[in-house]
Every structure is written in C-alpha cells, then in structure tokens.
Length: 113
Image 1: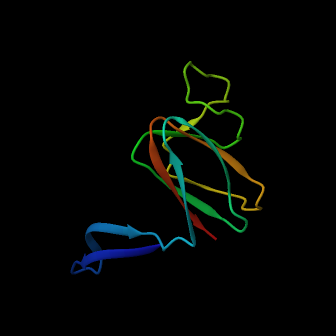
Image 2: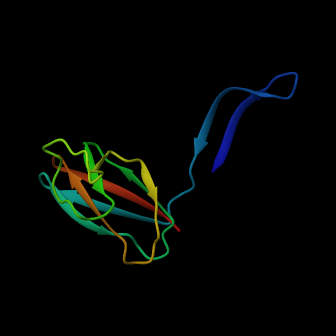
Image 3: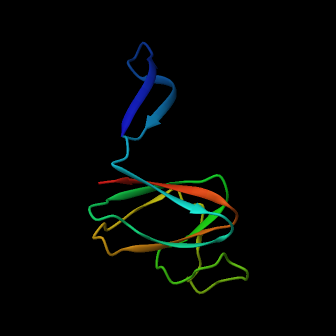
C-alpha cells in the first residue's frame, strides 16, 4: 500500500492525518441484483485479495453453503459475514463465495493478483 503523509515536525516525525491508498485492481467484477438474492461468485484464478463495494447491506458466505440472508440466531459458527471489506483468497479458480444482497443493487468486487 502507498502511504501519503502530510507534514513532518521539527523532530522528523510525521504529523497530521494519514491517507492510505490501495493500488489499482487487476480485475473488477460487478454482481447485479434486481432484488434480494444470491450469486455464487467464483474467485478468478491468480487472485490474492478481493475487496467488496456496495450501496446496500450484503452478506458473504465464504464456505458457499448458505444462500439467503440470516433470519434467525446462529451460534454454531455457520453464520454469514455482513458487509465484509474483503478477503485474502486462494485464487485457484475453484474457490467460490456466496454473495447475498438484501436489496436491488450492484456489488463490485475488486480483485488483486
């Protein structure tokens, strides 16, 4: 990651807010939902990291077992993650995530190789 720092004080320490930038993605996918629903997303071969972006709440099942948003309490470890920022992934072309939207929207997935 690139790190842009504002100013240095008299001791040489950086002060002020830091702004972190991520590099441009190597690959971007869009999952389009006309209503609530699930899309089984196959992570592209060679991917190392994925980053999600959406305008609505969404859930991800990294085990690709569940296909609907939660409607009950789950305390077995088999729950879904709500609005994850991203994941480190295997990128072997066989890894699948279920991405579940709670409303009509497009979810972007930025892929880093």
